[in-house]
Amino acid sequence: MEEFVLNIRGRVNDSDDLEPYIEGNVRDELVQLADQMENWLYDEGEDCNKTEYVQKLQQLQNLAAPAQTRKRDHEGVPRAAEQFAAVLNRYQKVWLAYQSGDAAYEHWTPEDGKKLETAIAEKTSWLDSNVSRFRATAKTKDVPVKAAAFVSEQQVSSFVISFKLYSISIILLFCLADFGINCQSGVEQTETSTTATSCS
Image (cartoon, rainbow, N blue to C red; front, top):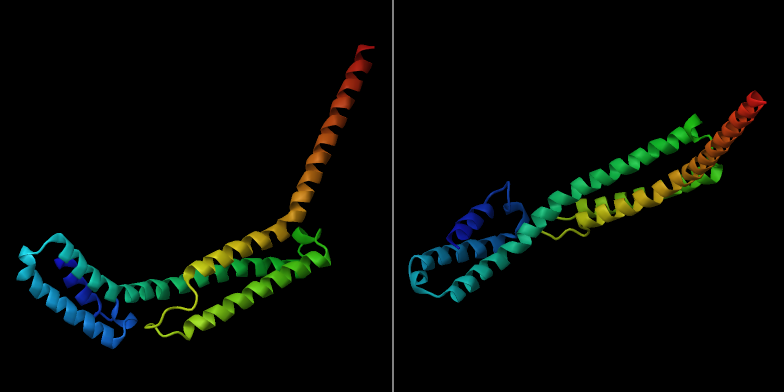
């Protein structure tokens, strides 16, 4: 308990730590409570039972928890948004390659290209909207959308867009595999026929 009291009192007064994420009146209340608990620890606290220790520690933790959560969220959202943007950027490059007539995508139909373009636009709009909401939120306030939402949206987007990108490729692979089997059968038949002719 003593370690937590000393640690949290320093953190809420550190501009590189929790200070930006806690309201001034809450910080003052927390520091005052931490001071009281420190004095209590070296006085009445020496003879109190474990239950009282836990109750007092919980009281201090409850005051600090919102700021700790906000710090984690405010630091996590930009990282998650950046990762999501990087994924969309990769898909955007694929679409641009298709638009420029890259031979790798010559098997695509106009409908395939349109589906990819629409999916990218929809997810980019979601990303831009929620990043704007986040940037408008003060650090002393809870974020409107958490990093987990960006991660989840990125995973869904990756699945949906990847499916659109590779569904045709999968079909082609099956066709190529079938072609290979047929070719192999033809080779076998040719070899058999050649062998038979040689024997005769």
